Amino acid sequence: MGGDTDPFFGNVRAGFEGTGRLDRREWGITWNTPPDSGGLLVSDRIQLESELSLIEQG
Image (tube, rainbow, N blue to C red):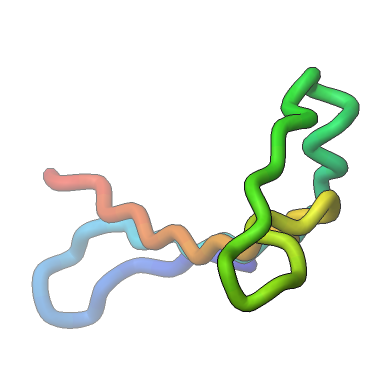
């Protein structure tokens, strides 16, 4: 995470990273359809990862 000025064009750039975890049951999403081969189609826990790059144009 951080920001700096672009040496070529002089625009301000900022970058961010984030992670998180959700339990879909906490949001009321409880359905699940088992595939023909067995097991579960959707996990109860969902891992989120994000990377964001922003550029302020001058």
